[in-house]
Length: 243
Length: 243
Image 1 (cartoon, rainbow over the protein chains, first blue to last red):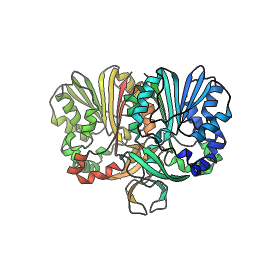
Image 2 (cartoon, rainbow over the protein chains, first blue to last red):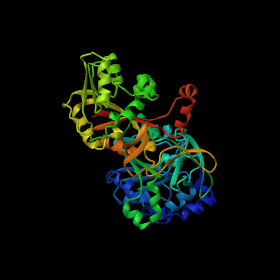
Image 3 (tube, helix red, strand yellow):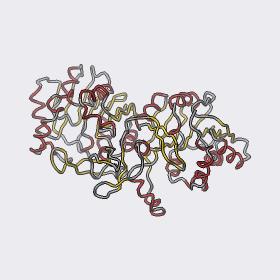
Image 4 (spheres, one colour):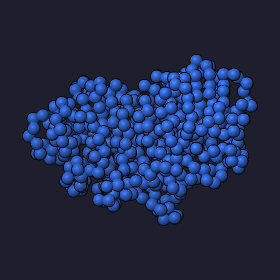
């Protein structure tokens, strides 16, 4: 089972104070880029894997999705998500992405924001999605970027000349990374870019677009602290099409 | 025009002493992985973009390619390549990859080893290949990995704990990088992974396989100095199919 750090009180308390938790989709700097990679959701049945507070589910429905299924392992997250909407076409289900089953041919769009790097058995999930996403349907997701997750000790350091650099090591050594993020002992799975891409190809998806996200000039102007993110992308955004 | 560093006497002298120059394909540690990504070349018309000493051209012909066109900008390289074979089905042509023209529908396989990171106008070359590679044909190539080319100052450093790390900065800042490799002032073009992948998609190629190359356990056992390459991949190997 995936570590369910979101039901850890200290973690959940910290997470709830993040911009992306308070402001919703617009509080996530990568959202405009991810949104641009989505198909027109009008009339689509959509699943959101790791839906959290359900911001995307509500957005997709407002854009005209026929139905939205939000899946999350965290009771805390689902309780908040359920409190926000009474729309019967939005359904929230508690499930572990390691073990989830989805009915065959049931979705035109599978979406996931910053959840898959918690999943240990990615192959099993992709096998499920191969069946669950209709041919021509899309799978659009974000994960922490492999350059971001690779280091044994993530965090900016200075080189001898005083330049800020991101200390990459162990990039090709895939597997768990224990990090300090809001609380101690958060476990993420480090995978290479090639791993994500080849796994999609192996499970019946064609690669449609790859975005190594960094802030736009306008975003840096508004929030200068984002400039460092140009040195190494924090997020990988992928769009794939079921063939 | 691409910088033609290979006709610089100091560079050429150094390059000629590398394992990959003396031993041919088997002197390149990434060759087994790149070979595994190739289609069966029997009966195919093949073009090698940046053919160097022609090792791959001779290999492809020995494997049964119908014809092989080797292209390089360096007279030094082509002179050596021509000296090695009298096979009329292998032809060597001097051309700059920035400006090359290739007849429409003339190749079943386009190949390139460690040349495209010298090319400034990658879009133009891909536009040429979109026409030159037959539908269902393949484009298989290697380049220096974007993690390898990103740093303003490439080279291992130690962090505060004495761990060897690769100092990534400027990853999202694409463009020329001047490095010291065999001689001063070698200009390479840094592009992100996403850039290579999206450019292929834009010019009519589907992504078939992505390999961020690192040494195998057997290769490390034979050459322990290769172990560092697991910390950050030196090469990116890509296989794409003309759709």
